[in-house]
Image (tube, rainbow, N blue to C red; front, side, top):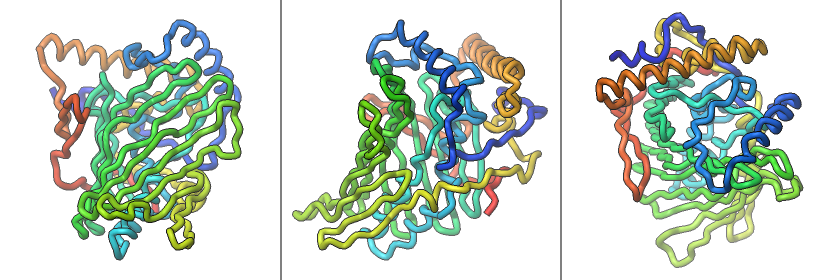
Amino acid sequence: MDPEGSIGTRRNPIVIAKPMSLEEESDADRVSNILHHAMTIIKDLRPGLDLISLKYKAPPNFNIPKSQLQCFGESVYCWGEDMLEKCNRGGSAMERLVAVVGWSISTTRPLIFGAFPYNPILGETHHVSKGTLNVLLEQVSHYPPVSALHATDEKHNIEMIWCHNLSPKFRGTSVETEICGKRQVKLLNHGETYVMNCPSLVFKFIPTKAFEWSGKVKIQCQESGLAAEISYKGLSFLGRKSNSRSINGKIFSQSLSIKNLCDIDGQWDRSVRLKYQNGNVRTIYNASEVISNLRTPVVLDPKGVRATESAKVWGEVSQGILSKDWKKAKKAKMAVEERQRELAKERESRKESWVPKHFKLSYSKENGWDCYPIQPTVPPAPIVVPI
């Protein structure tokens, strides 16, 4: 079976919505609708329930016009200030770790309360370039949902490999989605690999309404022995915003007796500062420079866009959402999902297992899911972000 033609059609429109940025605002009608819908669902749920098992399909009026794959990709290729290139320029291991911390924070993006991206379908891909950075994502598993990312910049000799497995659980007054898996950033000029995790995404609906990032992130470089720990904190239970979207943490050595080298504090949607032991303070991240006024990717080569591309698979659905033609969006979304069920039945009848096209996938109880790119580098994409 040809995976390129199995989940999409060459006739589908290619629709790319603007990236998520600090300027995003909630839609009041959408918020009201989703709260009403959520309350009808949660009355039958129990705390701790893994929501993946429900296989729930959100109606399109709750969707933003893009896939979760696109949201992951945007955090890498949509930026105003290039935080990734800064990582490579650091003259010392300490400076490079500080830059990686800033870059990691830059991948934390605002979300719209009451709106969700599409759940990627099996085999869906997303391929975009910005300058010399080429980014490729693939949905390598559907149940459980596992997304893989490979990005390379041959000019600056940087490589990224991510493997994400979403695990949403009902917590009584919220839904917490743990983004399991690891991210690797390789600065090949320096022979350094930085391994990190991702904060969790929390959807609160009682007593306050909020989408927020929460939890601890650890960034480690085995080669230098340096590491950072960062805690993301959201709104208080009663919704006080004075410390919302705050970050605090530290950079330390895993080998020296003096472990705490400097402290980190700030807000990921504003600015984050680094305070050294001698009292000096510097800003290592400014959100208004990195995730504001972002440019929307454009299709440079329509013929080169795969049938599996997110912007094509969901193109007709996105058209309906952007035009608020909910009947069209619902019909198109049902067609995508029904096609997936048909393909799954066909594979089952032939006793075939799905094999990802661009990654090898592994799983262990100790380490969870992991992915390995099949190709050493990512080629330039037919979809590009204007510079």
